[in-house]
Image (tube, rainbow, N blue to C red):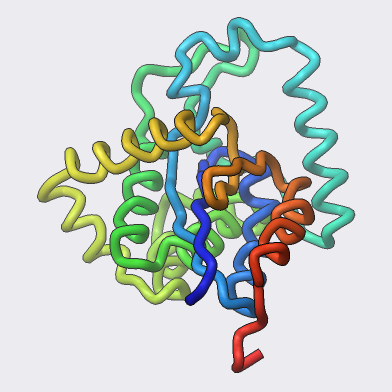
Length: 219
């Protein structure tokens, strides 16, 4: 029986993007099932988040994620457009959020189809790797979905027919994240134990090894 863990993920989190390639490789090479659970960013979940956060945090986040990306050999650039519509001078988050709800629902739909991990890998790479402007337009998301083994148009038709289903799934994921003992992303939860941040993957692997993590036969 494969080991199982939950991955709580947000498309606006650069740390989620940076963690995903390694987690994808881990699930590919080892007898491990990773259930992706998409959540909305804190900017949407916590309306006053950017009004109370230390002003030193945003510039540090930019510096830190650039450093980690360089260390991992991954390209990174703040997305164009940002998945969250926000005024960076006032930190005000707009009420209308067309991008993050769309891609989060798509992620939830991919999760339902059992293709959550390849979907977040391909879409987050499209959004964050700095090679794609206007990732929300044209066929960018369609091609990313296709690489993940999914049909974006089909997913969006299903979402349009019943958006409440996918919003409820995202809400359930957010409650499960808090129940597991954390609020941020990426958080990996194995047997009730949360591992927060891309810098906790080594600790996660250590714990998985204690429970008999083995390589897949094909590897």
